[in-house]
Length: 466
Image (cartoon, rainbow, N blue to C red; front, side, top):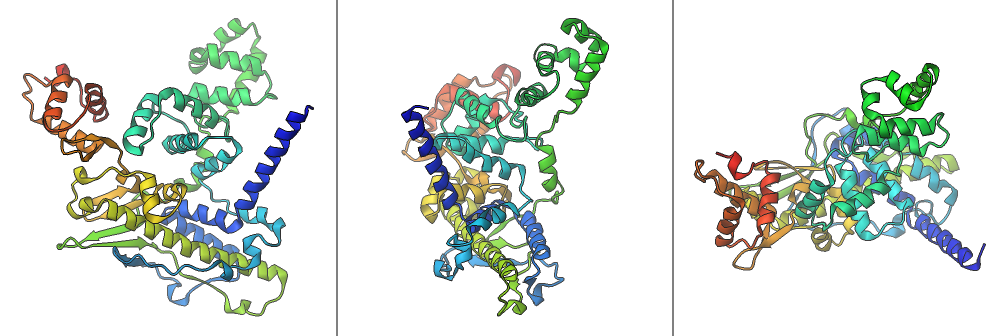
């Protein structure tokens, strides 16, 4: 091995050690809890109480099924954070380092999204690639497949997430995602899903022939034309049966087995936040706890010196601290979103939504962008005007109006829809004419953008609207 290779290897080893030291057990737990919507969090709390004999529910919470809300007014942004001095040495990683892996592993309720995000650390991704990877992971369906075209995803990434990208760039990141486990994740079709699994398994019997079937004879395979496959591959019936047997072992729904753990979640949406606006326009933000009880460490644990018991006690205290920090982070983030989008929460008009990206909320709260992303993921907010996914409030600047103010894609789409609804159906407006009318209304927008927005709204071209 050359000296240069030795240096590279040493650098890689050093970098890996730094990452392990940075991800402390309580941070891992907080990340997990932060990403959970309220109904999943309730199950997680119940599970922790069953696993930890020294973690108890407060008596006033036992047996109660009422919905409890921790409420704070929009203008009340004060928090009482715990200091690091209050955290036991065991939880800070200063000692008992051998137990870190145990704390990182005992949470076995991870969703497919959680598991995929964990694997991002195994690949060298730029910051931009990490953003695109998060976006692709969030675009997977419940089976772990990517059913929407990269062209559409690239357009929506720009409009709704403020991510400038191309289908080719997404293709590059998708190929990395398809190296994640379980094999087949991120496939865009059944054919690609099965191919990924076969190509990654070098020990599968008949691998080369299976690849030929899936790449070149897939239509015959789908229609069970095995006699034709036998002839094309020059194999006998017994060999064909063995190949069929191997194909049947493949998983057409690679994300399904993991997603099944959370698939039984309540079908009706349980909001994580409640934002109420009274008749005077005063806004109140509420964090939902659902049926989650308040937790305490058992009084019987006081004075216990047994190391095994102390480990349970410290684990329970870490869980309680993580729940408290989750609540504080969730509230501060939601308050920042409400302040940035205050006109909408007062009026309920989506055209009043201002351009807002993850880093806008991160700047307002002082949190990292990844933290804001975790809070926004899979969370819902109930407002006076309806219930919305939290991600819905993140809007991208599409253009500027004649006054020089930023305009969102939703505002342009609303204006575009109004023009089309008011058009003469005997002579529908062309994209060129729609562009001219929008420009006359002060929207600095190009014809291709008008066409893109029209297609995204499901509105056909002019000749199809007669």
